[in-house]
Image: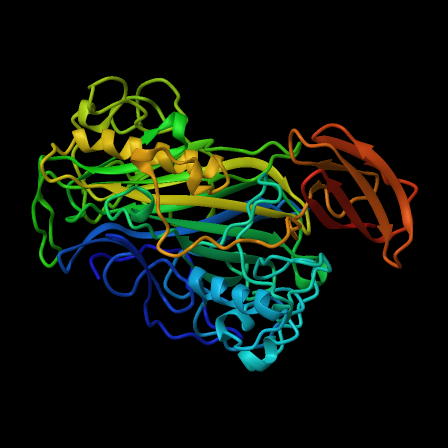
Length: 561
């Protein structure tokens, strides 16, 4: 391991036992390493590596998710997946889970072809039948324990052919990936891994507060050097569970992401941002990346690596939040002489400062030097163009190179109980040994644009331009119906007085509200993408909101208390 982690928490194993054998997700020349419990702080090597001619070169050492907010009593609560010993599992399920659920698109295609042949699954595929979709009747047989989760949140997303909310692989249903705002579009990636995390606030022994589902996935293409074939995606679905599981609503919440970028040798790097692209990237400070034993360097014209926030949390009014701040950090043990306020966080309060776009001592980020001491206030670090030599950049400021980290964050917002927010990220790189180390930043920017367009078109490979196209390694899965189990965006949930509902844009539909015993409470035609219902006179209890549009059906449960 190349350096010491200055973490302010050591999580113990309370109820779930995990080994640390690495699990890899590889696409083209890009490979991500997870521990068997899903942690993205590797015990050996780096989290993100470039594989070339049998050699692995580091791009990112580690990454990790943060959630930070204040409980109703005003106490700061901080949750993290950073570290090698995260507490992984499913809230309410007492079971040892030692590996991720892994499904490939060729397994899904074979499963669906089996069902479409005669309406019966003749050759069950274990990966399909073991998937932790809500209410899966075959789950215990294939996993050895009962899922037993009835929270209204499906652990593993799936195509729900009959819209009953139950995952039934024997009926031809299969694992899939949904993202908010894409209506009826579901995606079956070439490969996806699913990890559940049961998180507790820092300093608490109760690991039944926040549930996170990490889905790591890729799209494999025949175009070996293409962008999509050399990119990976991480989706974190973060849910605050009801009070009986120990969770409480959070005010002034930030969701953030820690990135330790290491381009080969970790001691000579710079960091930058693409403000219009919600992206952070790392590049070598020098034209050549030397070795720092035992870490192998790239040599001449090293690669650049970037991370793009594709989907951020929703604000209190249902508006998606992009990057609100990017703070650079230095590793004091590798880069001595840096101001203490610009080094790693050491406690929840100093981490909170970084998430708010401030230094450890509460000073604002400023657009000169390393961002500390002088200049004008800024929100995103090093937002200039190193290639053109314009704006605020590390190379333009002649900063001392070092071991660069960054914390990207989105907020603040109110996190209500039962609310689910997705933090979706893409990872890609650009490496052309015949091009200069700065010129490669332009290539990275182009690749990030391809991934953003791919996401904006709901992961439709047909939307890619010919030069950036992707011929999938296996045939795309054809869904026999256009119905989905995608959920409506509703907030707050639970509620006492009113609820705001967000619908797919540019599509009209009918909203129906049912009581828990199936009675129709109201029905109204919806001609806009948002509406508000008065719930003040509704009896306390659980309700089902169902919206039927022109091409899709969406549903979500609402708790009125």
